[in-house]
Length: 303
Image 1 (tube, rainbow, N blue to C red):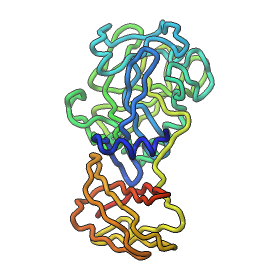
Image 2 (image 1 turned 90 degrees about the vertical axis):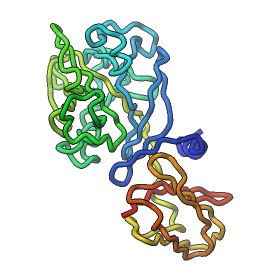
Image 3 (image 1 turned 90 degrees about the horizontal axis):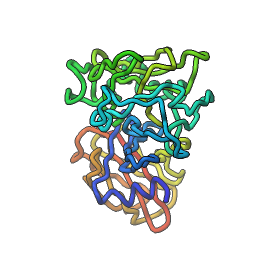
Image 4 (image 1 turned 120 degrees about the horizontal axis):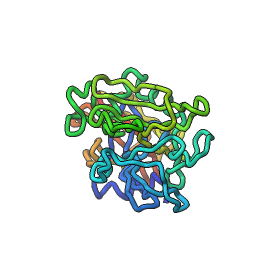
């Protein structure tokens, strides 16, 4: 079953939908690693990410990962923050970008370029960190600057292990990329409690950092309807116009808010339909427009 069909079928059971800018959507999907650990997923732009850092203890083929640690050797912390891995272990000793490594089947360790794409989509590295961090101070130390988690990525401050001691729990989330600099160094991204940036750094492969997986083939909502259907303006103020090139009467439109709650529905009655949007609060909404043969999934921004 496709992602969009799953989205449609699951909306009635409290689908989680989060937005940033115009095209960030989280779906109530899960992925299971070889150990049975369950992870949620999040779609950000045209990328699909796991919503938690990995805590797996075995490679996809069932063999044991030897270079893996729980912070302070405490498995209860691993259940919250995930585990820490050397670069070689996370990559299953491959040096090829976008290798599966320790990720579940169909997923891989993100390349530095994929991290760059994520940062750019979220407004640039100077701002992206705040949109990736879990908001509040349940896990992050004060001040957790700029943290909004608008993306739904929900980064947690898992800290690191530098081969002599554990450090920075509550302060930093350091996450490997699959891009090496040379035989000794690899690139990673980190978030910290003091600013809202997504930082890039290159350091020793034998340090122990977190791993977050990205899907091999990403799927996002189609925000470009077929040519016979056009909506405007977007962003919308008081009235949304829906124009059809052919007269498909009685198309059903359902609008969901960022919590997956149905907030409005109506029927398109002619080729040029206008709908009052004043009841909607400012924010981003998902529209499902369907008839007996086709379904369009669109996003609108309400001013």
